[in-house]
Length: 302
Image (cartoon, rainbow, N blue to C red):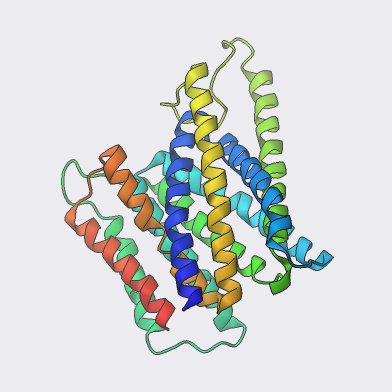
């Protein structure tokens, strides 16, 4: 019961963090948004770690660092695909993939699949097809690039769950703080590399241009970039809170159950995208979204 409460709460908080990250990526680019979010998350977790208690070992910190590398890939791809949009379609796609990966890992490690698991996997595949199929003119349509990034992000998120699960139950929030620190270092290194490449190849362009990975509609103004950084920072703090809830959910029960219930995060993203961005979704896509969430619930029961 505790696992379900913590994981589902973490999922809703994750949805809000992803929405903020997607908005930030539209303004300052996915790489910089990920770097800022990770740094903000590290600051928040570093302050909260002493309050969480517990004792950690070097192994816990190493597993947290490995999870940080997976997180860098996961969040970078996630923010990039959400910036491309539509958020309400690509977010559930990453969720389904992130739910399946830990479950298959448990199965490969010797765990037995429940009777509902094969049906849930089949339902998940149908859901992926439906959310990508747009028969109505004017409905939102995910691009192939967005879909590929979504699948890659979901796989990396699943890897993050697997790695963070290797930390001891008594390690508190320390592994998550290391996770955010590693992610921030990696992403700021990428930001620096992109800046150097941009300076070398685009010397004739005006100063203050958007980051090298920014989308074409990014706001190049100082005000737009400042707003993007603020969104990324807030999203990073919200993401850190979601990670903490999911970590405690994993420690309270089974990895597969916590990861699959944590995959319910698109509910928060979809709601915010519909309210704030007024994204229109075709009925067949709504059916796919419902099936995606239903498959995640079935996987939890399996």
